[in-house]
Length: 180
Image 1: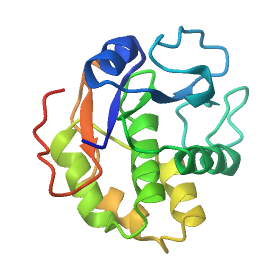
Image 2: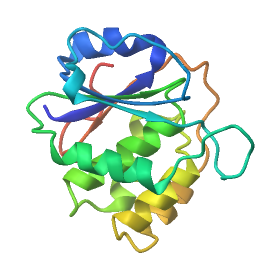
Image 3: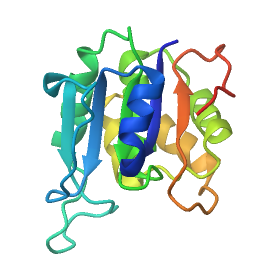
Image 4: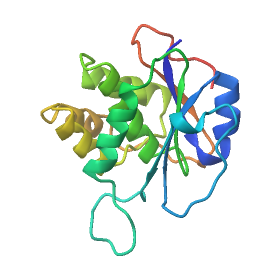
């Protein structure tokens, strides 16, 4: 099954091993230190240093940027989809769900944004995708506002303790109730 596994930093090793992932995207604060799971090769690990903020110019924090989204899209071009991909941030609630949406559209450009967002909401009631990442992804992927509207349409996610993960299948016909 080709899918994107999304979760918090604390669960990356467990998720990578359980799902057989070989590649990973980390959206984490610049000085946040962590160990890459051994099953993820260093050359297939993309680390994007950013904070979970929606606006630039907020002091020392690093806002998601066009360069971050371009790096993500370039990384996705190298994903052969033979194994699931792990995408994580600190809590798996905002940056990583936004990156998962962008990644899914990068590898499957014919995907309908509203169906993808609905699928995200179904498997991740807690997800509140980072609006800045979504807006930049929409623009770079030439979605003409549809990704932004789709994410606004699903609204803010439910409160969470930041310990949950989810599987976002790339194929809409796949079972979205897969074990996480």
